Length: 135
Image (cartoon, rainbow, N blue to C red; front, top):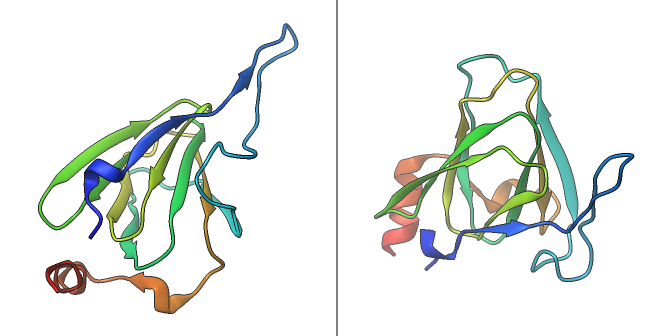
């Protein structure tokens, strides 16, 4: 079973130029081929997103703009990571509960997922997540 120790920050290569910075995710930047891309934005102050775990899929989260906190749980341990740099992403392996909160004004969260949307891959209740981890 996955643990929080497997979740990690990954630096995305950054090309600096007087005209601005450019970051690229390709090849082996992340350990999976992205099958789905989505992003969260205009999140109202005080709102939370996430509140689920994936059985199989992995995700890579990036704060393209602004900042937000990612609360991670593996059934035994809890860890909070603040994302606030567009060239640093958070790899969340399967079997980890995640919640996103404390979105700053104008923040944008980009998510690259290892699979297409499948409701069967989601665990949406924390009680069910604990049962999944205890099996």
